[in-house]
Image (tube, rainbow, N blue to C red; front, side, top):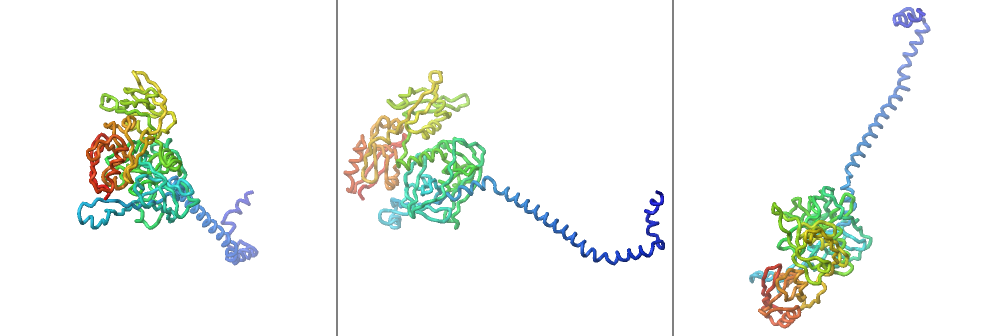
Length: 497
């Protein structure tokens, strides 16, 4: 009622002089007990509130730190962690024979003009029992190969086999005998997408860094199917390559190119650079090809090269001066190409389901073909598109009889098939298919055609070997004339010294 309403007003509840003695005593007691009550209960409640606040802040900080940590562990980090233990450094010692140009050089080089040089490269383990894949140019001419693992262990290695055409070599660790090594996960290179992340792992600095772990650089796949025009010093072809802007420097050769899944998709092999260092134009051999070559080297010690006996050239250019197709110019009699029905004048459009727009594309298709496995070739003949089924066979130079002339030269005789295969102008002569480092230092190369020795015409491998054997030990001067890629040259050297 109204009395109650009036009683709730502050002027009536606490007006001095109207409170009873009992009420005043109660208020005095509460005032006296207030500090004790606060000390007992208020501080406990406040402490619980502060502790909860601190704990909450710590939990939020830990969660944020965990989130940041997880964002640091990207696919690139995980890929590097997965493959890096299998990447190795390769240290090579070569003993080279050098022809002294002055009496001072002869004094410093010593008897025989021999000197040692060091080489450095990378590789990666493909088998837990010690098989290592690398580039052929890393171990070319090696007298000793030492492989250093990412964990710091060193192994002596033997060269199981090498292939200079594809620039692939296979090593086996032998001393101490390895087991249970970390083999790299092998992926695929036929489904690479331009723009996807890749990681290059290798050892560009070698002994300049004290720690043995490999160097990791990241980039993207800049392009696939790249054909690099062979340079003057090139011994093989870099065809159908993977291009990347991941930094590749000297010493990276033979290392692994890895996708975001932590799988090896290529063998880092070359760069285009005016400075010798990376400018973002690196190239890797597709892992599908590299593993096929490695399997052949492990199984047979050599590579069976597919050959069909057809030569091509760019077809007539279009209105802007470019040619997008190739034309067959030569078909070797009784060759796989002739048996399949291919003839000069046919315009090639594709091989194995992949387009052929240049002679290097054509070479790339057969570089990856297997002997004895049928390949379809699409071509336009007489205005009509046709499909030809071609069965490649071994290169004639592989199946030809080999003749050795001491330890420096191995020859085969030229046949019509070999003449067409190598595009030689001479139909007779001795083709060099093997030579020593000393012979290489003279300026000779594999597949040079020797057609004259000391002004005597050479028709067969047997004739060349017979002349060199007769001159061996006589301290005679030998003048050898040869053909190389349509050019002619000669070298002179003293035999039997």
